[in-house]
Length: 280
Image (cartoon, rainbow, N blue to C red; front, side, top):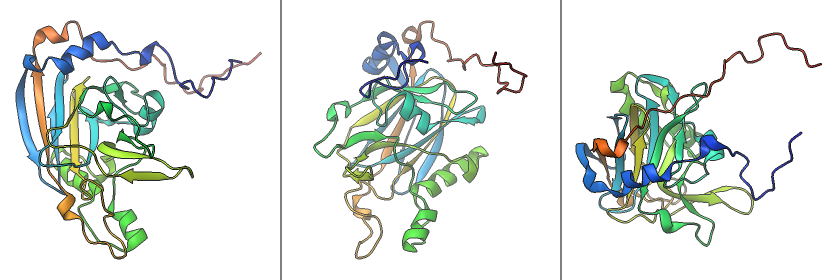
């Protein structure tokens, strides 16, 4: 039996998790070697979906002030392959930044995207243990809102994402756990999830490189910068804390991609123990 790792070591290690930083660093830094192919702004408390072709970079940026965005990703040609937040937490980190990868669900299990730019990468861990770009929590939704507070509100991130993907033939059942971009979160001493005010400033951005043809969808969270509770006793609707987010898709110069190719899935036969086995 293999030796148990020390608590300070990552539980998951191996060559498949190693990232070629010499390849990805120029993609994020040499911004003059890219051209805009699509750009739009998502208004407050809404959502939009869009294509990110393989080998392109997508930037999500703050426009007027701090704003949290809830991101979903799918394989553009097979939406059964989609972002897997929990496995990304295990293989990368609970809060992601430059050179971390966003992994897809089984049986595909390969990078959907690699993060190549993050103007807030130096935020680190604050005094309360808060960090940015969160995979711990998930999207706000009207079901929890109704269950806990009796609030009937149709512009939670879940609903925004549902409306965003309908034109692409997807439904509510395709919306999944998110990457909370620009969101500051952590776990308190009781191991309870907490959220803090978003520290992003106008012009901050988060960029990812598409490892395959992607469909992306983003919701501008109705909580805005999360500096105030959304709903509850004696809480006003914090709409003044909400700001738009801008999305830009870039095509890269061919020289930047070199011999890059789309990641492959693990070479597993997929029998799941269905063949007879002896353990002698």
